[in-house]
Amino acid sequence: MGAGKTTAGKKLATAMGFGFTDLDAFIEEQEGISIEAYFETYGEAKFRQTEQAYLRQTANRQNMVVATGGGTPCFHDNMDWMNQHGVTVYLKMSPAALASRLKPGKDKRPLLASLNESELPGFIESRLTEREKYYSRAQVIFDGMSTRIDLLKESILAQQKR
Image (cartoon, rainbow, N blue to C red; front, side, top):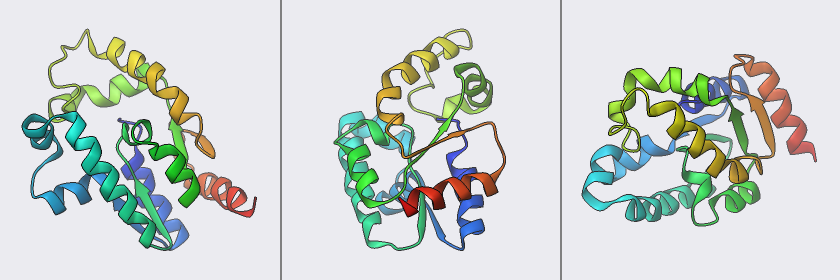
């Protein structure tokens, strides 16, 4: 959350001549409801089931960069599935950098909306600690503070050759 997956994903897709899909935006479009409203109405467990179903649909697409939500790799064996169906990338950032990025728009993020400014950094650090075991299984780990899409592209192409 806040690492810049959508921004980097769009730039990467352009650099590679691929299409781009933001999984959360795709879910919102298909379900006719915002992620925030979906969480409020149906809860996280139902969202994660829906998310898994839409993630699986991306396997039908060739030459596609898919930006997932930050929790996507952590549920329903999604990380294993993504590693089997493409090259996965973890845009790694420090909790402080993420907190700085997330602070202005935190009210639009279901998992952050109820936190006050002083709680945000601790929540992010705790969440990263929980999720690191999934994120670290990505095939490419890239510095999320880097804007070098050309280097990210090279890393992905090298991984594809393996």
